[in-house]
Length: 493
Image (cartoon, rainbow, N blue to C red):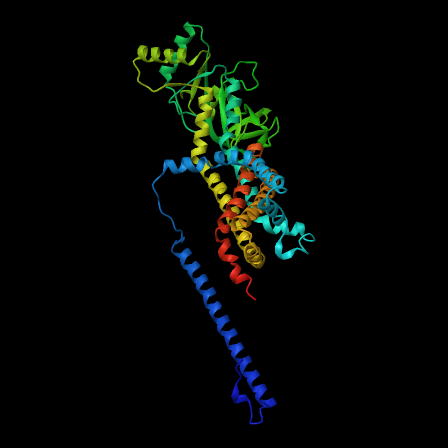
């Protein structure tokens, strides 16, 4: 310890005045540092404000971006994250429980198993207090991993709805139009992309099909908006051929109060009047669970769709169904091409292929985002558990070093910590999935037509993240067990 000799008089006893002077000097120095700190922070604040003003004045958004080449393999790999995690969760949790059970079963017969079972059941550096803080200890150990599992369950539920939710309106429309063979402009057609059959070709196909007593049904699709009570929303209307007994039959007189059926997700009651694509319509009926992803589905007469919603009475149909097998339908299309001499495109697909086209579209355009979140959840859980394991090793390094000095092998200590991490992983995975399941429903309240949820598949994704993150993070940190718990250092007196 050093002293300021200038403060000491010859007799070695400092005077009150000298001590007070030294204290005053220290206060002045501290005040100066406070002032300099305040000035510095003020300059930073003024600089930030000035920078923001200049950025707004000259249209500088400060956004860092760069176009990268599209990597189809990378997208495919990311989209398969959830599919890869499902079996890990489905079989990993039972396997983890079986692993812990096997260690307990071998404990009476194997010294390593006996040590691993006992050592993994308590915190060595807090024997007397761990039981009193059991819940707090569990929360501290697996809280972040559980959060990662919850996030993974949540995003898996969103991903399922994004990819499969658009099947609902397709199924509803398919039920209205008989026939499994669908003639469209090209084989990738589905509701979110445009398709139009050549009018002359479509007429010839229907004429040839009628000669063979094969019923055909034209239909249309329109992506538009409807306005109700001053708010605009997006919609997907299917136009179907109707007769006079249909509630949406249109007499063709005018485009005022055109009868439509609207999904209940819109919140529009039966009998209400609203505007669709600027056209006045009246809701004569409702459907249930036929909308998806901010697209409220509706049903309208096919002629009303082209004449009123699309303002073109001569517009060709989106497609037509044929009540025959795909091979016969393709033969009729080929005959119509030969008879008319037209080269206009037309392809025959099944209704199942139409749904697959929709699923591929959404998987390619939205699912990569949710899959990246699942991938990030694994990293979150892994880093959290690696950090927890690192802290535990540091906290218990003396106890671990004492065990090593007493003859316990490094691998036996690793086994004990892996058993502990496995237990934590089961708690984090199962607990996180339980929390994530109800969370997946929340977006349904903020997105019209959305019907997300989480089931066994989504829970399996969350459990996989919790388990893999816990065990993987622990295993990563346990590589340095010998260095952290060096018995020569930790047992030195």
